[in-house]
Image (cartoon, rainbow, N blue to C red; front, top):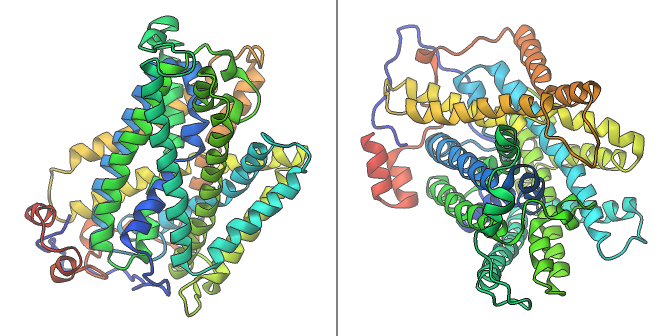
Length: 518
């Protein structure tokens, strides 16, 4: 949205002190931003996480969940909320600045640190996943050695100039896109009976064993899994801060996410449901690659060379997400430092705009957690660390919508309320559904019956992030004596882009005219 008029102000209006920017430089082009967005959106959630959802919820629950969450994330969070704020008020570092600017500085503090820790915990999780994927070919190399090799690789990419990081993400995302397009084409061929078995596939697996398994619990479980699988799509809001032309880049990147999620997520998942039944015994197998419905579909077709190729592609996806976690974590630290929520030295950059201190801090913490995750006792500790950030993505989505709601409320408009109710409602329901899945889980014959102890432990593990978030918010509020920003005190002028600048970046378009009329 490009606002055409200033909001009403009270006589006692005092602008909020906002940092004008950081030392981060605009070295990323439009194609870099679009591919970074795709890289963060397509990962193990699609290739691995869809397996348990298909097993527990059936093909109908799987498809409905991803359509609903995809609509909420793309249309409400990215297109309407993050896109509007970034185009008009671009920030370098992290979009968590909007929470502090439009709602409450204490909220920005709590959200920023929890979001940073979420990405920091994502690094060791992806490193462990990479080591497990390598065991598809050999188990002779120790996991710690593999993790070390992968850590050095992803760290080096991030310490290079940001344009090189952008090129690396462009290449990895291109591989993802080509692989998924290839799988979709292969799926059409297999459904038509063109595979080695010449078996034609239709909707028989939707009829038997059925489209929806485990009733309401199956759908709820699928919604929770879909929400976590799409976590990271908001990373485009961080990357666009280093774009050369944010007003031109952001709309393109958001539209790219929307259309490619429709193609890559929805269409690929639908084709999987035609090729793999929800009661397939391989969905109960041990190991990440063995439970991937994409690999299972290829194996059923008796194509012997493709499973290894697809495993390599999944490995690239995992390493790409690991690289994105260092990038995102470092930029969040820069933002926290600029807002006074972290030590000042973390926002320092070199002549090429690299936040070396923030990169080093994020990498060191992620590395320590990676090696902690190797040992049996360390895995338990890491599991509780990860639980603190389990709901971080949902909190970010909900806060972005609330910040956009407050921003638009300053202009006394009402048309945005319906999108806020839908998007915020989906986030809230997903948090509630997380509790339902914890207290009333779907029975797993491999794990045995669920007793009360297991339910209580799972419930606290899933919801630990909320009390930690509240404690951080309350602590900073007491320490800094911050107050909720009144609507008539919201600063909508500092850093705002003029129409002439926006038009010079992206050219006069129907998109700009439409938003300006709003």
